[in-house]
Image 1: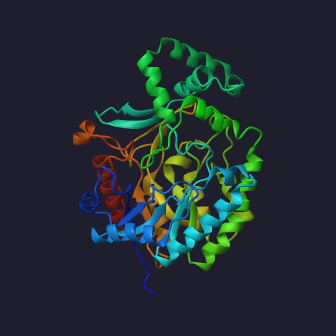
Image 2: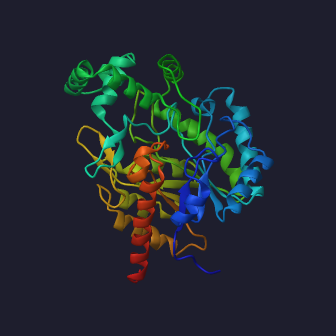
Image 3: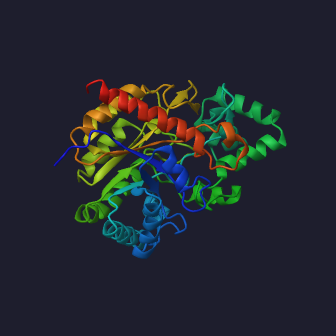
Length: 392
């Protein structure tokens, strides 16, 4: 069978309500769509009819549904409570229905309560565009001074807590309200979101659940799910934690190379794969991304490419795709070396993008405006072509 030399250029789409339409995505040069059935509540079955309806919509636009991102894992599974059985069974049925529709790559994450989290969705970039940012001072100000989580102040260095409280004291009511809204807002494509009281309630549900517990719950989930994935030709790709460290006292179990070692040794199934996200892994200075991609190349079935600039206190800002702490050339080269061994193209997408040009005056999903990702995809497309043409 002929090998695929290029990775597949893909694009995240949040369904019919996404301000970026399918025809715009096709003009951007992407071939594959990365999407989910966001209207179906977490834990419920995706029926064949719903899947095929969305697939038909994508194919009518001249594109293909290449990756599901995400089939969300219900919090009862993450918590390991008795009600998780129903959601395990529903997840299996969803996988079977996706396979019947010819969709074989499924991304998910195992982050408790929150998916990716930022403190600023419109951080001014030097060129006039805006970026996503996680500011440790602002985050701690929220955790200690606004959320008032029990023992929160003891979780951080004393001098950083002092700086955070000083910032909070100086902050205007508008700044505080925006910080609350930013942290508690629902993810793009969903109506999920929290009030402060509901957020406290959700955090309390994880009281006493340790890193070891959450890792064990992930292994339990995968031991249940991967046999069904194997039977139906599906590769599950876990997305790393974002940020890749504990926030609000919640455990994290997919943040480091050590976490991956434990995960893949515990569940060696070939259907237990990785969504390699350079932005998530790259926000930790002790993660060597080149070593991760080399070590787990055969596990990688889906790729998110973005870049970050990290600071000593743990803050980070999302930079341009080719400029930041991550050596995108070396990462892309390693991925293309692995691609040479594959008969199917590995899907990659530009992950997030600056809000820029005309999108500065439009309503867009945070990180998912059209033009910033168009720039990112163009840069990554050129990087891929340049590496391949150089005689890889």
